[in-house]
Length: 253
Image (cartoon, rainbow, N blue to C red; front, side, top):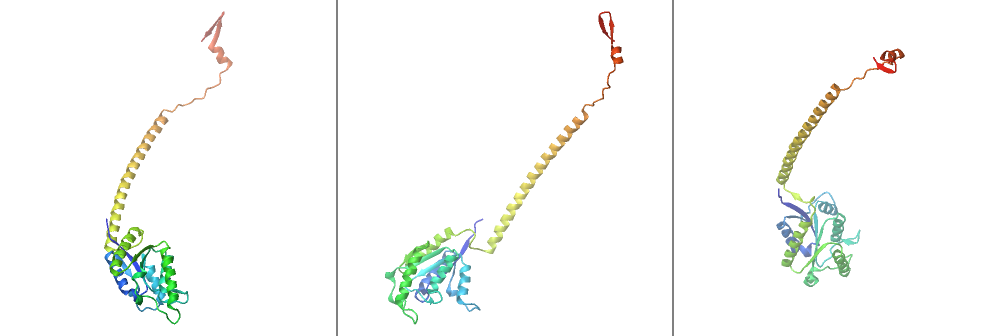
């Protein structure tokens, strides 16, 4: 049977500057039978935010990264942004990675990094450019966009292509579809068992016929076997009784 498989995809990006873009990608994902997951789904939990993020990525089949004009908040324990940290984790999990990068010419001043108490904006810009260069040369599916309308098309194409190359062992299938798949397999196996049983019975009949034929042949051999008798030694007297000489003629009695 044919059934619809859906894939879960983690959407990663900086947040404040890409709210609209994230919403567009989420909608496009839903339209293409993907289940989007991202920071919008975060909720209060008895665990650190990073532990929650890792768990969400672990449960996803693909990873989509949107890069705009900001590098984002930096985790000073590892000296990279949380967005790059998410990307590294997805790569370590060997997830298929899609990357959508906004062209620099379409980024307005209010969408770029500003300085904070620990990092100036120029440092963040250098880190952003290094990050973009890395993801473009890291074996990912990469495309570029200018405006939101452009992003819709690019995201849709990226997701369609991703679904074609996703392994068979990933994705989500409706429970009712799984029931039908299992039932089909049960019927198929039962038919195979019936066929195998018939073949087995036929082989047993052939073996039985061979055994009967051999039994018959053994009986014939037994019924017609030769009997051997012991021959007693012959004496000189017996020989004399058998032959006599009459003149020059040897006669046999």
